[in-house]
Image (cartoon, rainbow, N blue to C red; front, side, top):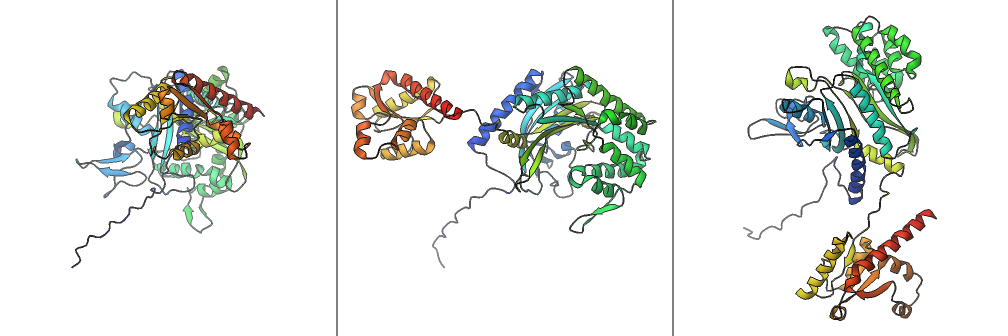
Length: 506
């Protein structure tokens, strides 16, 4: 029998599918963007709220436990009390739970915003991740569509605060009630037609993907895709299909509103929806938000299955180049609408609510395309090098580092193997440090430091051909009293900033 212990297997470092690591640049870009969004939301009188990543699965609404594990769309686990919990799928269902649980303490209307990660247990793909960030704003307890109009205006102001100019975005508004009126007018009203209505909603939700012809097939007999898979249709006849496609195909609301009102005439819900759209249009126009910013547009169909009234979507209208090298319109970066039924699930009484969600990663991509993100400079730290490892020397190095930090200068003391000084300068070079502070025993004895301008040194090194010239020039390096350390570093950093500014304007 071999008593020799087996060598332990080396663990393979691997990232789970559908997840990504975020680098310093990405994190700073998101922080820069979300700070601007928060400023707009706070300006409108909204307050922050944070809910946990986990909720009880039945509270999420869309997904319920199956016999073994509720993993359809969500990541779930069973607690020690045998209750199923899931990572949140969005930020709206947790808000509904919070409002219902704290209803007696909350001041209505309750105006709040949340930013955080949500999780989807779905097949990942290019640009499709299982964890991503959303930024939501909601008003709970406001039944009037003036709350929806305000949301649309806040979305427009948010995009402009992020540097997206007018003409490069559009907030488009529709109303689920109008579609309900259209469906009722073509004979799909009543509880017995609920399943068919749902099929119609799912069909028109594919408008962007399949176009009017594909949606017509899904509204009618069904559609076969390129692989041969057949999707059963909603079973509408040609006249019914034409009326549905007329509604979702409206591009000029003002020109079509009379015909639309005629189509839904006799349906209370449809008439109410048209009135609400007209009211929102009048409110935003009065506030100075014309159709170049907020537009009534019945072609907005995303989320109609979920929302109960007004629906709105933020769309970026400029062209970008996709992975195939094709010019395409960037498209949607967020959307929302009225969801009066979500909080009511917990309450047993009507609780009106409206809100929208921004897809942070997608919007960040758009801002990078426009050159509106990552423009703020992040200066790497000044490096205080270490020449000696005794307590007295280390104390001096640490004191210098803290003095720089106290003056608002980003700084670090070298924490690696200090005995090979050349490695410290290599570290500074790879890190992009602007300045190095050097103090050996001779300098310490006379209370001076050497300050090396690494940016200028790198530039000048290309102009010096031999080592003798290098030693004679003492490239971009000066000796100053310890007391002048902070002032001299500030002077060098200011000169570097001026150089960058000049280079940018060339």
